[in-house]
Image (tube, rainbow, N blue to C red):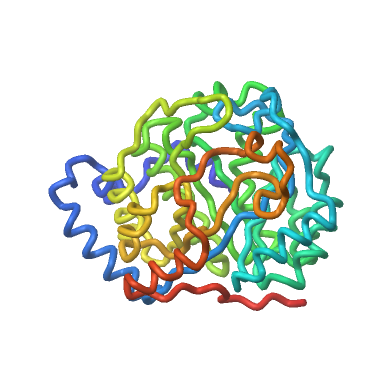
Length: 345
């Protein structure tokens, strides 16, 4: 059985209550409880990682994404020399966890290209996660053998009707195949799995219900896997697609604290989509992992091609470098963790 068959079953009532606007008056109490549970299960640590964009080719027409195949933006993928420059730039910061992204084009960034990239990256980083097109279970096994230990995959929206409208063409139209992707990765032996919904595409309380129910399903079915969630809010990108359902800072706080109370051992990731002040204030409320020194452009750290500024996937809000974010975490009384896993070389 896959999570698809759980969609007709209502999530736990206590989770509905935690996410309800009626909890506004209880938000402070929820925050205290979330902090207590986070300290108990994770201590005063924040793991840092950074995204590394290999390519921006895509076969999908996602209406909300800057990489939409119909968008007239410059496209490229890093060659071995460019990738090595980008990777060494990151490695010099001391960061040992990276997330590699490729856009979703099996033709222009095939599995063989991903494997070639991993051969360059593996000696420099202890943990390599992927955010690429969905794969089969056997393909995930191939990448795990090449050094990948983590998967990030966003369902974007759990509402099937909205999903259909937002993905008019391309392989991403297959809602079911994407929904079952984390399970295929878990069965293949992936160490960490991070799922998410892009907040702003549909009413966020409903999205949160299904996202957290999906995370609970994975955590219960695959207890050996470290399950986490991301809570990205829609940000400006090339075609200026705007959010249809606004998600306030207060909503984000309620979602994070509810997630921690509902799943005490759940990893919660916060990206540089959010503004520095909000990210800083959320430390201690349940966040376990944060991105740092981010760019959403291919070769955005080391390449000087004029096309780079016009080829981003979306705008980031927190543009501080890794040293600045480490300093802030320390000032909050927490420890920034740059490495917490040693993969098999």
